[in-house]
Image 1 (cartoon, rainbow, N blue to C red):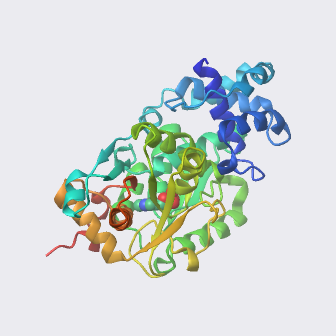
Image 2: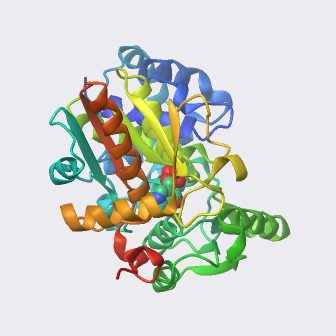
Length: 399
Ligand SMILES: Cc1ncc(COP(=O)(O)O)c(C=O)c1O
């Protein structure tokens, strides 16, 4: 199977996922192939081809499936090929260094932490090191996917300002990509975001509006909605909480990378819940492969200090969240998350943020539970961002 055919499938899958009527997590590759051929009512074949062409030239995407049903259909899609539009979109993004640097992050096994926790060798805990992305977090994948889909769908035109509510990391990723791709960016960020995040946004030249520090990410969401209704013709509202391109980023990159890196041995996937894109996307990918248990992690209480995460029972629930996908959702206290991040730094030498700590605390709990039942496990926890983003916060106030 030539890789360009598979690229078409992934590309069209990504764009399909931007249609509200299409639930990306429900597709496996062969379903996707069939759906692509039927989906012309949502997006024109022209646009789908443009995305495909872009990805052909820029793709670092891993490819796992050989969808035979697509082969007969691909020539029909290619017949709608429009070189000019394709070239415009491709030239906007191709050869952009930061775009090419996103993804393909390392997965490391935490041997020393496993021993420190007293786990048997049959329990493996691995960490996906996402802070090596150029913007310093897993959210680079999200921002790139949202921008790609918006350009391809004609929703983000030259001169329009991308606007979104963000607790910081997606904002940094938008700001970074905005600088590199010449897209003006306005971000609504809770006033409680760490000083490091605020300064990083300023460094990239993004315009930042601060929302009530006591209202957290929900306050930012409410404020961006007010701003967009007032002047919306100037804006492309990226809406990461309701934009399926967010989950698609993880369905097409994070999930397949982890599957490859564990050689398909993955048994448990642990991901903290903010927009829920990581769990929905990568989790949706794993759901179609073997029997991977999907564990979402949220703060144990409504008032918490784990930046980027939502306490779902009391928060605005993201539109992309499908409550039937996770096998369980674990609550982690702020102090427990902080302790785990500190242990990671001191025992393994990895300097990560508090949501990574929350994932590790949940992974450690899970490892002990499985060990007590004599069950082997290959657990992967997401390392969402690095510790230096929190130097001015309580996380690293150590005596
Ligand atoms: C530091 C951090 N960790 C975890 C998450 C959660 O990831 P997701 O939005 O994919 O649920 C976020 C989201 O913004 C974040 O900023």
